[in-house]
Length: 448
Image (cartoon, rainbow, N blue to C red; front, side, top):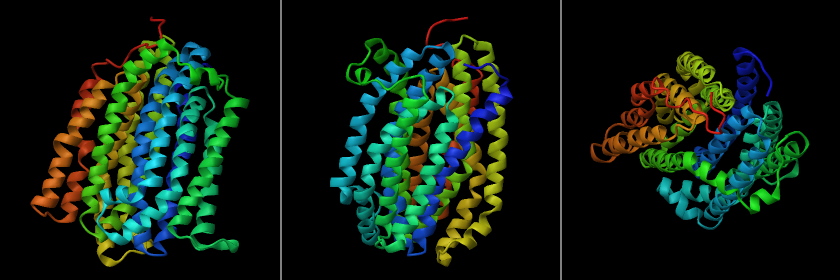
């Protein structure tokens, strides 16, 4: 592992990862822009059907975060063999999950769509999308894990290059298959699904080639077939909380989408655009969380606990500053964004105020993503994040949102405001826990 200053390493990690997240976020933007030109039902259907991919990514993220947690520390320690064993074990966990979601989307798309909405036109469009996009689940399930290993072994630029070319391919294929360019059939929402599946196949091929050619940690079939017992115990000890957190938080976030999906078609359309904008504005905070986790994890694994603590504090300060900036910028662009969309007046009204609420939402997301998802996870402090997220989501957000929507029949924007408070209400307890420094821990031996 190379020796370099905090600023240099932060820039080297965070900027490429930011670009990678930004490029990934352009895919739903491309879907939304191209499909809304057809009609808002096609866009809404893809937005809701995309929640299946969101839930799948929650499972995959738990595995990927656990892998990154240990890989960063093993890399800081210089233990490549353990990274190989870890990758084999996590791959064996990820493949069944990908197959399960593939089967749900392929064989039960109608049942899945009815979870999110009762609008029959949107359900029918969503079924078309799910059956084709289901192949992407298998490709992404493998690609994300291998990308995590590449990032944690100083090959983040390679991941970014693959992501850029993959997203460009997706956007081009979107146009070809949605509108029927160059002799291809005009497939609408099914074309968006086909473009995603093809580009995902390209993406997994790219990361496998990169792993074989560039990464010091090799893909070994033996480590997939036969898991290392000690590796299993260590991974389960710290990653089980991540998995539980992602499962129940993900189910809760899906229920938030369900609540919005049962308001009316105009709210669904506005939320589809607002969700994409929030994701674009959050690219930097996610990359800061990933880069911060790698930096802090490297130092903790190398036994430099005090330096890891200092790095953590600097990264949190950056999260606060960037959260304020990106939240304010997003809200200031609310009017131009609304004007650029092809929504009816009612949907445009909802969208404008949804974007104004990004001021507080993106600030909270930036802080919590960096601290809980990045810094705490880098030292194996995963149980706190699990408890914090689950209490916030299940004790406050879902009950309050459901009561507002279905019992008190509050206006849609009031319901939306409540459903977006989850990131802000947990900030005080998150900061308190951060200052206790329970996350400053070497997980791979070699203490100070």
